[in-house]
Image (cartoon, rainbow, N blue to C red):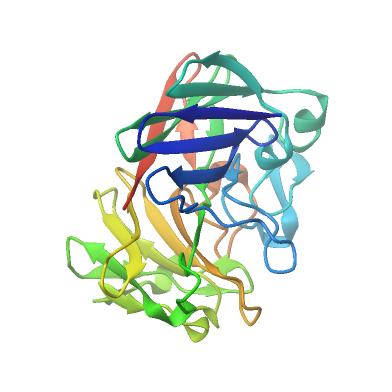
Length: 291
């Protein structure tokens, strides 16, 4: 089942399965900015990544002396959420632990995703609450895929990515879906031309140090596109299918990171993990403006 929120400028469609945004349409032009989810290239639209972001080394981890198995990006994207609040311009989706999640992740939790639209901007807020009497260890992230090109007379290579503010950031290497934060290095990659070869080595990962960053994906004339505000995200990943010719670019704010290649597998040691004290709440989020 899908939930629709809208105003005079935009309409957003969110599926209860995964609380996943599947459509974001500008009413004036009819442009849908979200990737179709064609499984030939990548069969999702904008999944939430929880309670891990990226891949675990050997797809497992240890907590309190026990071994647990979990595949890339965690389980929330494949769970049915409950709509706990909705009006014309916002909706809140909730997921809590169940028998299936406890097999992979031995924690009680409450995860809420809040979608809100104002003017031509969609904001997605994350809330993670620890209802238990033990610390909660988790990561969370976004994986929205934006169409490129947006118009039928355009090509994929007609699009560009622009980072603001323009500055030196550290880039984190990724190999075989695992990271190497110890080898991150400074780059001035504030303007990138979109091409298939840009993603030949998998995602581009930048350490944002929680500094608010606006990333714009648009045609070269900037007549249409999106601007994503990462707010206080720790990292951002930029990804598309390679060599498959998927007509999308993912801009992914992350509050966590895939395991380092030298990970010891202990969840409490996991690089960039978030630790939430009992009966406390973590909040984060990002926003997307369309033009």
